[in-house]
Length: 446
Image 1 (tube, rainbow, N blue to C red):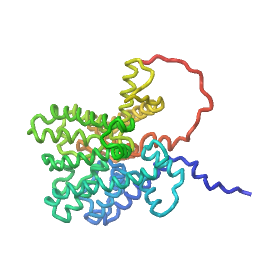
Image 2: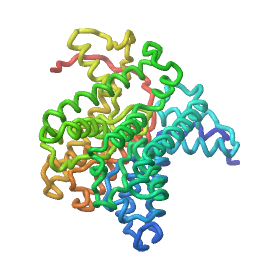
Image 3: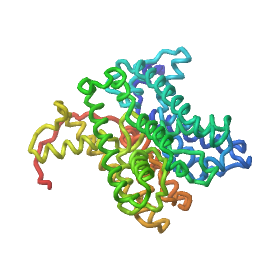
Image 4: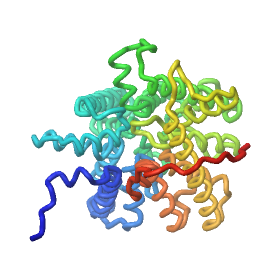
């Protein structure tokens, strides 16, 4: 007689596979909804290749588009895009956990473990409390951002339309998505019309930074306030690295890119481009006029991205920090990698190295491939692949001009950048514990 599977067989399933599948279902659902005639302003069916690209970009909080969000999509279509941004930014598993809690069902240990992997939490314990905290903070920050933006958008677009514009751009900025509705002025113009508006620039930058520093960082800041010594090592590294990655590029942009502009615009453009480059996707200046050195610096920033367990994509600031600390320990001939009086585990350093290798390989190989397919300059193609892989969403203006084959490459990069390259690899490869260790032999490097 055939034996029934035990009720707990689901616990043996690969959580990374479920995370990947969750995003895939979200993308396909969004693409099908955007194909409905009601989703476009002209009440026509948008081709699947365009709706799929838009759904991937929104779900993966990237911001690259082939159809202008304001002029092509109806209010229903824009609402679908905003829904994809919100779910993609917070994480499919987070939303799933919230729905499960609201339905009154019990949250099992396996589901808690999957949530831990989804938001990069240090432990399973307290994961439900942390999820509740994330949901409350997200709602509070996005509503505050919308309220702050409303006076400007109310003046620009009217009382009722101003509400929708405020909510849409607050959610898009917080989730580091970069989708905008400013195409009503000029298609694909992003936030260039507010390049000299100090108030809008500051609000958007604060939303982008808040969404990009990570959920665990919020938890530390709420619990310990400004007492830096009380923070987790993760939070200390995130705050220091984020500060460096905002200030140093801003100084470069100030002197190298916007030297011919008035002082106010020069400062605002420099700061905003430094903040938005790491996965936000908005731009307040014409990026097509940027020099090659400026474009490559932005590409590096896009690949680094935001912080672990945040709404942002990219390799993450902690990955780059660990690699720099590892290099410094080698230069100083130290056996251990140390930071803020703590020792970083060897497996963390190996993981950081693997992530860097994977991102650089994908970035270069796909950039070269797109350049060969569409005959665009290599710098522009590398900028595009860096933007997709880092889920940044800024472009030098070639997205709509690329071939379908290149669009497929960009979609795959956006998906890998948001879900996480290692998550996809772990989803495809079963875990394998080492039964024995082989003999060790040294090789010469460097």
